[in-house]
Amino acid sequence: MFRKLIVGLLAATMIGCAAVPESLRTDSENPITDVTALSDPAGQELGLAVRLGGVIAAVDNGEHQTRLEIVAMPIGRDAKPKLGSKTQRRFVAYVDGFLEPMEYHPGRLISVAGQVGGEEEGRVGEYLYRFPVVAASGTQLWQVKQEVWIDDFDRFRSCVGLYCSPSLINTGFSRAEVRERVTK
Image 1 (spheres, rainbow, N blue to C red):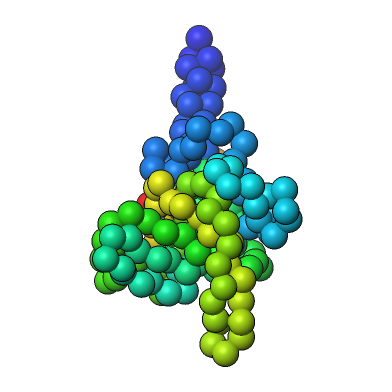
Image 2: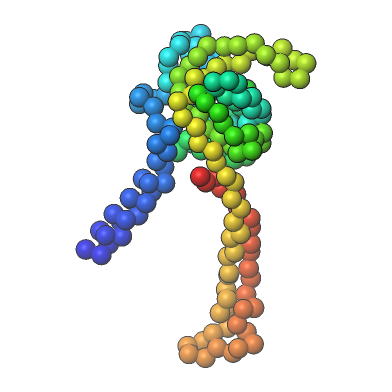
């Protein structure tokens, strides 16, 4: 009985960890999640559902909408950009209304959901660039958290039975590493 309870709690936790945030949900079961598919004529069909993520490169607030230029990165099943992965091409997301530039600043991780909105020409520096366009219905900003993981090996290696010499405690090997993860 106890095992079933533990397994059930573990399964519920794992399912919850992979859930897509409400703001990034789409009507489609399988939205486009790879920006390179938007270069293909089949992926440029207006109105197709997309869910993309990456790093904000530029923010431009207009009168009625905000233009986000995003350098795409692969995303996981939870819609979070995958850290350490190679960046893909750039795309533009148009969001209705005003987005605070102090919150949506260049260098910040973001995911957007919406529909294919065609293409537009622009520049990256002096380079002429064709941006795939997403009419965004939702956005999610992400943070990168650093955690220190410490493994303590052989901490009580000289203990025999109930006898442990205080001078031998904490003389084992330890290993520490810094891990980064993406969170809300």
